[in-house]
Length: 253
Ligand SMILES: *Cc1c(COP(=O)(O)O)cnc(C)c1O
Image 1: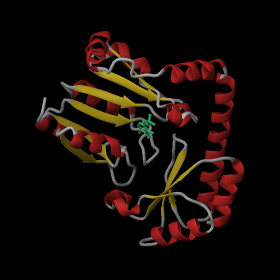
Image 2: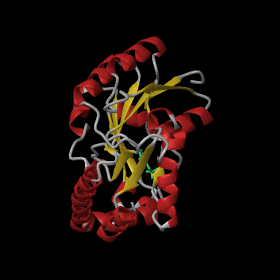
Image 3: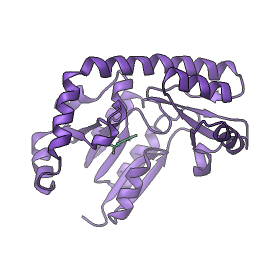
Image 4: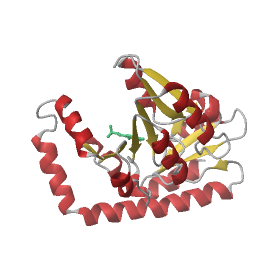
């Protein structure tokens, strides 16, 4: 219904806010803990009690911070919420953690996944798992034939070659550890742990923009989070690439 509220922690995936606002919904962002980027459980529960949101989005791991929220806190939120809680597992291939196993326990929990971060972003394919009665309602408003046959055939082909995707994911995870250690060893940044295929790090005050531009001049494009302000001030986010790309990033840095 118009006037319904959508709640998500802040910062999180920007599309939650953008789509909510373009649908005329009341979007509420609740700040994460500024040190750990974990959920501020009390603030989340207070906002849920006050606004009774129809939807709560929790990215697990979170984008752009890379961390997994504390599982118990997520469960508290699912229990407290009268609306639907969507756990967005876009980065599941890198995380070794999931709420899929909780689906049978909570009727208001939905788990969302995408093939995008697996290296198939061009397919535009994702899926949602949840209680059959909720999925049944969503199927009523899904557009006819909304997933094209080329995408379906490609996904089936990819599934037959899951070994290749698993091997790729394993390399990305080991590269993530390598890049994280190298960043920490520079002793110039606050480096945040990540369960995703990127690493967030904080520069000394007011150095992020300069560093970002210097990297770009050397042909290395990362994401400058600092212009977002708030908890993201002085933060840069680097996506883990091929080993030689990661080397180029570290070298340029
Ligand atoms: C990338 C991403 C998605 C989905 O991306 P699509 O390409 O639209 O499937 C969803 N949630 C988060 C947190 C993401 O980072």
